[in-house]
Image 1 (spheres, rainbow, N blue to C red):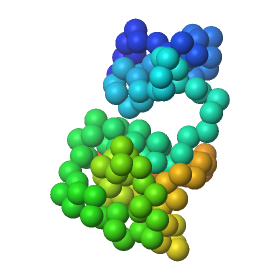
Image 2 (cartoon, helix red, strand yellow):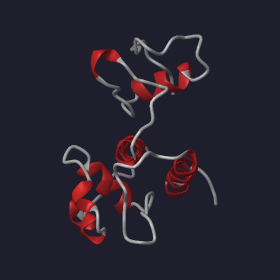
Image 3 (cartoon, rainbow, N blue to C red):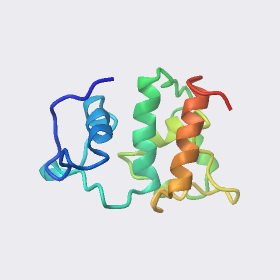
Image 4 (cartoon, rainbow, N blue to C red):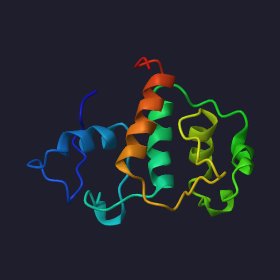
Length: 133
């Protein structure tokens, strides 16, 4: 993978995460916010993270979601998933990358923790066979 030249106005080349964000943008994993901002110091919601993971899953050719969004009916809080996120949330749930919480919730609007991010990335890498468990 190579980074392109598309840059966010709030991510400068001196930042340790600059190259990773450039790669993610170049390959369509992230779009950022309006005004060409990425907001690297802000928290992200679980559904925002699920969108990025779904885009990475498609890049790894894991995009089959034959169940559509009906798979979200298994979660008590599925109505909280934003319309713009439903397809991607359903994709990562359908692939088993995100499994929700034991009480039947996805908590799509909650902040994504580092531990949850690490688990999701591990799940993606394992399912795509880029990493062994």
